[in-house]
View 1: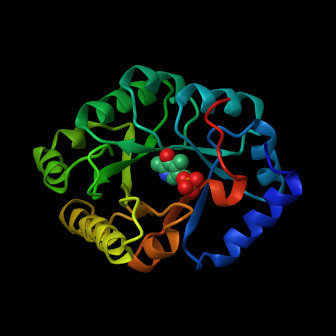
View 2 (view 1 turned 180 degrees about the horizontal axis):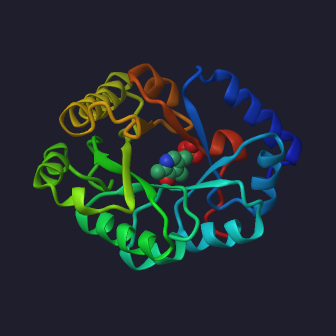
View 3 (view 1 turned 90 degrees about the vertical axis):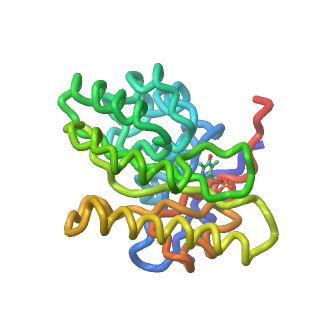
Length: 229
Ligand SMILES: *Cc1c(COP(=O)(O)O)cnc(C)c1O
């Protein structure tokens, strides 16, 4: 059962109060109805994250136009054209081909779309993302410099789902140090490369401690997800 609008408001305020200044909150609304997004919107939230393109597009069509939609799922190349007209940030870029397709589709709409490079720092096999070496190779290759309709705006990563705090912190630190390495090598002095998206409901305080400046929080705001719907 969905939680009430009042509960969403309270949880949102509580979550925001825990975040230091300079840390942006993406409210992850996947599986929750548009009414839940609207409740958070009314409480001032403008950044929302979704991991299914169709679901995000339906919500985008129905909800206020000043919402910034962040796509946080695995990017399927054939679905990029559906979100290209409106998506604010695509967080799950994990190969050059996806970046090139975002560029093509963004160009059709005369837009420049912000993209985050997803980096695999967890020990779990199942998570998507560049390896640290893979992302450095892609950048060294230089073809991305010809893409004028994407802006590489930072990195995104997920830690292993474990109670071992030291491991989680160390994985987030790997992501943060890679961000700085990329920044120094390719985006020095470029204020547009600035986002470290790391941390979810259960591990965002560790991510922030490691240097994250964008957290993606779902269940702590909207309640548990029911995937059976
Ligand atoms: C679902 C999801 C989140 C939010 O997870 P919660 O544990 O509900 O906060 C964050 N990031 C990604 C990539 C997700 O898919």
